[in-house]
Each structure stands twice: as C-alpha cells, then as structure tokens.
Image 1 (tube, rainbow, N blue to C red):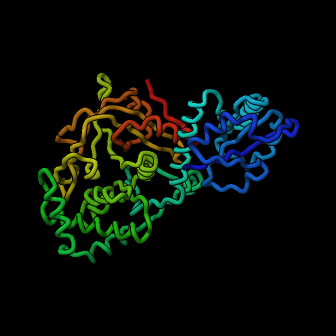
Image 2 (cartoon, one colour):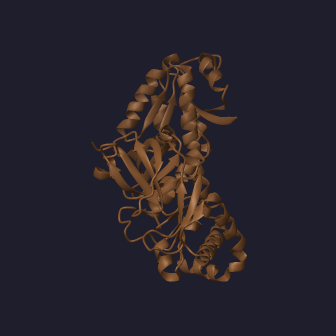
Image 3 (cartoon, rainbow, N blue to C red):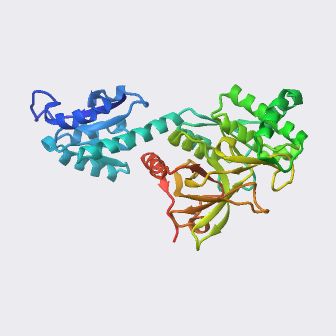
Length: 415
C-alpha cells in the first residue's frame, strides 16, 4: 500500500486521551487505502521530497503553529480537516493566510468518498512529479531555427521540475554512425520493412542509413543515461544526408521519449505525458484548422510504430529524402496537450475524438483529424506554439490535475 504522511497540528488546549480518538472515522477510512503515518509538525523537516505529505489540522488554535513552519510546508499545501474540535475553522484561517502570500492551498473536508478520491488524485500527481525528478533530456545539436517560441531555460526547468537538459554535439552521433556497418543493421531493417503495410518511397540504402542513425543515437542514450532525447533532424539531413524520423520512432518503441527538431518543450511534454499516463505521445504540427466543425488535422513525419495500427514507409515530406513513417492510428478518444513557457509553467489541454487518418499530399506523412471538445480557435488566437502532443485516450482530468497541483497556468481557450 502507498504511504501518506499526515503532519499533525494539535493545540495543547484540547485535552484528550489520544490524538486519534476524535478523528477515528476519517483516519480509519483513509487507512483502508493507504498506510497512514502521523508525524508531529515539529518533525516535518525530517521527511524528504519523496514523502507524500498532507497537513492534518486536528484542532483549532493551531494557526500560529502552521505559520512557524512556513518554510517547511509542502507546496501546494493540502490540509485535512474533518471539522472535529474546531479543525475546519482553523484550516479556513490558515488557507486564507497562505493564499494572501501567493501560496496555493486546499482543504480536504466533507464526504469521505470524495476525500478519498481527491487524495488519490493528489497522490498520483505527486508520484508523477517525483518520477520526473532527475530525468535526463538529451538535446542533440540545437533547436530548429523556426522554433522561436519554444525555448526552455535549463536552470529554471531544473528548479521547477528537477529535470536536466543535457547538450550533446551532433559530432558524437556522427562518430558512432560511421562505426556501424550495414551488415549490423540488415536484419533490423528487414523486420521493419516486413511489418510495414507498404514501402512507397525510400530506398533500401536509405533504410539502412536510418537504422544506423537509430543505433548511434540509442548508444548515446545508453551512455548518457537519457530518459528522453530530441535531435536537430534537419541539420543531420543537411550534413550526412540521413533522416532521423525512423530513429525517433524506434526509440519511442524502446521506451525512450523521442522527438525531432530539437523541441525542448515537446520533449518535456512527452516525458510528463508518459509519467502521468504511462503512454507515449505523438508530437505533431497543427496543419489544418476547421472552426465550423471544431476540428484540426495534426501531422508529422515520425511516430512510434507501436502507436499505429499499420504503417507505411515513406520519405521525408519537405525534402523528399530518406525515410519517414506514415502511421494509421485507431479512431477514438484522444488528449491534446502542450507544456510551454521558458520554465515550463504554462500548459494547453483538450480532449477530443480522432475521427480519420487523412492523406493530404502537402502535409507531413502521419496525419490525423481530431474533433476537439474545446474551441479549436485556441490554435488561431492564443497558441502556446507549433508542436502539440497527442496521446491516445481521455486523460484530460489526470493531466489537468497534474499541472494544477504543480502550479502551472492553463492557457484559456479563446472564443
């Protein structure tokens, strides 16, 4: 069972046989689902960052005690107050004081079932946030020149999320790429080709080169212990005439978050999506907007093969070179999300329905039409940037809870 640390605040004016007796009902209910550890507020600084903490306001008259522990309070501050012994009155006063100082707070009170459900949501968001700590995002090369609104300040991202962005020169990849022979990747190429619905473009030589690049990048990921990677795919194409789209697809299948164009924000978004949902996402360009039908088409030249029902081996749309993937995805519920801002403290989120795999000639290879459940006008009037991430399934509530608990600002849907 998971563990909750209840940091207890109790006034000496309230005399009882034990702290637990007046609160037996709420504590017993929580203990059906969690291991509950009662921690005296004077010992809260002994807990570490991986311990899930809730303030247990056991009595009234503890307001000053909480203020004295201000530096050690968890952010945001969640308080459990069942109303016994004036506990709710104290929690209300504390909440107002915290909010006046710019801190987000929440009081758990009311029906037991609702409290348990909310604790589960908060716990899951906390665990997802802690799972991101010390994750390493490899930036191979530099962000594409056209991503002018997608920058990330490495230091601010480290402070907020405890993630590390690691710069890796393209030359490192090229060195390993040259060391890998066609014979070493021949069988892997045959496997990818044999499972494809068709091979419309791209030569066997292109496939071999793409597979060698995948092996080179994966070697760097293993050596640098990377959890995610983004690469300057156009620079690679210009310099060694190889596309990185198959490499990103296969890395995603391996469980390594991977995206093209050196997109720092999308790399983190994909990492967060995986932490919360357990699934890989699809980074794509919003390529067509239909306000009347509240639809958009997302497209890109790379997608994890495991996300597709079928796939076709194509070439890169813009250059007509190398290897790219045209994936056909299952219809059904999807979630669109993007985390933005230099310190990754803003986000866009919407659920929708994937209705069709389109096949427009003048778009990137994998294309999906999605009917949104929020106004599609966001993309025209208030976008956080170009690339957005699609994940299969309805994870709107889980993702929103995660970003809200972590004090991110949701971008409003423009009307």
